[in-house]
Image (tube, rainbow, N blue to C red):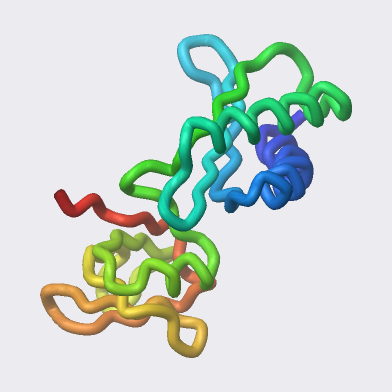
Length: 153
């Protein structure tokens, strides 16, 4: 079974679990590290997630995964916060983190570049709007290949 198919099936199982636990499902990644398979679930909530949040989601999702069994073979389930450089994918996430420093990479060049770092001004008319060192940049949401917060320490 393809990795992407497994991730989609797990997302469908994990979303109601996250909702029931009062957290946001940020990301689902199924990957191989050092010869073992890992199912990595990232969750978040306003004010940040706690260890108890992670344990509740891990227990509830683990039970659901055991019941449905969408993943062939053995794997480890990891549930954690998305970290300081959390990914941004949905328009609501770009709006939520307005004012924060972000990094964005696009599919193909826009205004002569494929990646930017700048202050997130929000989403306007289907475009991510950044204030960079060279001025304002608008990146259509459907051209965003990857985006994440940049840690400001």
